[in-house]
Amino acid sequence: MHTSIERLLVHESIAGELVPQLVERVRAMRLGAALSYDDDMGSLISDKQLETVKGHVEDAVSKGASVRAGGRPRPDVGPYFYEPTLLGDGREDMDLFADETFGPVVAVSRFSSEGRGGRAGQRAASGLNFSVWTRDTERGRRLARASRRGR
Image (tube, rainbow, N blue to C red; front, side, top):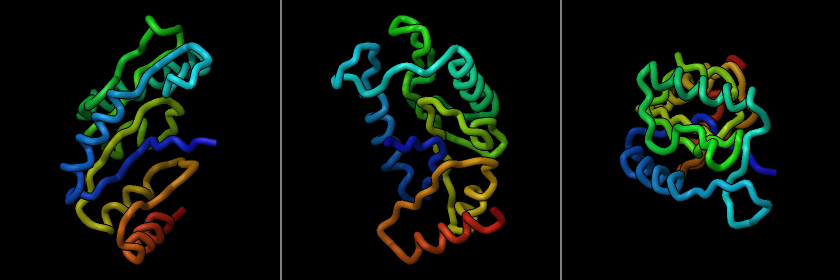
């Protein structure tokens, strides 16, 4: 089983180092239609899902998100392919923040304090998973508790 991250809340103190590394990794991903372990990602399931992914990216860009990597359909690979996409400047008013995209799109949002990070996590209308990654275990627990309040 794989878990796919759709919203990535990154503390501003590490965003400058982390985001360029993510851009590099996303750009290096290989799309493929063959049944091969050489590819990192395959096709979406349907035209409807491709339209959802395109719509979420277009909405985010129209509201100020920057495309850091990917961001395009890839009909040259197959009918339902969309590039692995990393968006910067994610905000809560974007469709992809409130709804699950179920596609190869991650929106990065920066936060400056635990309270802001926790509140941003709470505001997502849906979410199948949530995790906090930190070297400071107690701080991570506080952030996780803050994000669960009100759910």
